[in-house]
Image (cartoon, helix red, strand yellow):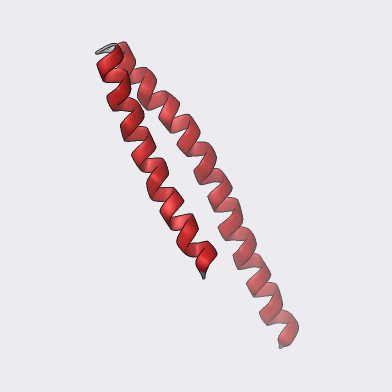
Length: 71
């Protein structure tokens, strides 16, 4: 239960990171900085979302295997 809560919080923090990176990039270099900030934030956030998805799918697979074993 706590792990799911932490995963959801981290997902939202990664979305916020992309926005923050775009804002910082905009202040540093108005056009190129915005694009670079979005790309950098998306790469970091995308890496997290992949790991989060692997965790969620792994957890679901374990739950399904446990149900199958118990029945």
